[in-house]
Length: 178
Ligand code: ATP
Ligand code: MG
Image (cartoon, rainbow, N blue to C red):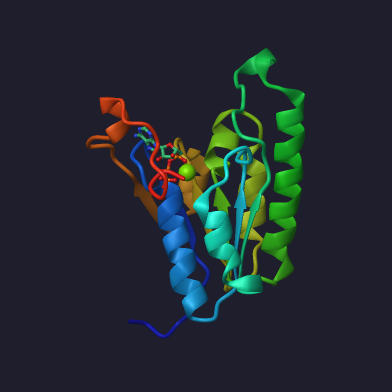
């Protein structure tokens, strides 16, 4: 293992399950090393995910905030201006956190959806990521990662769906999906 430290950009994308939970796993690992981790969840807000309380147990070293309201209606004229406003506010908070120097890892959960739905300009994200503090790691999650983000990322993982319980009609399970 190399001793040299540098901030990385990681992307968890693809249609298979595990993008958000893998990012939470990195957060768990890092907070155990005394690192400061912030996860900002774009678009999420209506469901109460177990990680909200799990992360709270770590106090100010692992902070998780939901910055959306869930169930986003998408597609051109149908996009609700309120959702666009919330993504804009979420991005302002994310950008400030990235540039603040207050964190070792910033996780932008579901940001890829906000971008692929046309609610956030990927060029703004690229510009901020390139201007981040040298040691800061940033993890972006969500399907359909934008090519310009994949381009600047160091580690990109595409989750592939082999099968999912949902296809058998099994509804979301506590502790597994939320
Ligand atoms: P997780 O939060 O479980 O790591 P994820 O971040 O990879 O999932 P998202 O695209 O954010 O997946 O979707 C959120 C919800 O959809 C989660 O409840 C997740 O379990 C579920 N989900 C993820 N992949 C699939 C799939 N291939 N089929 C059906 N449901 C899925
Ligand atoms: Mg997710």
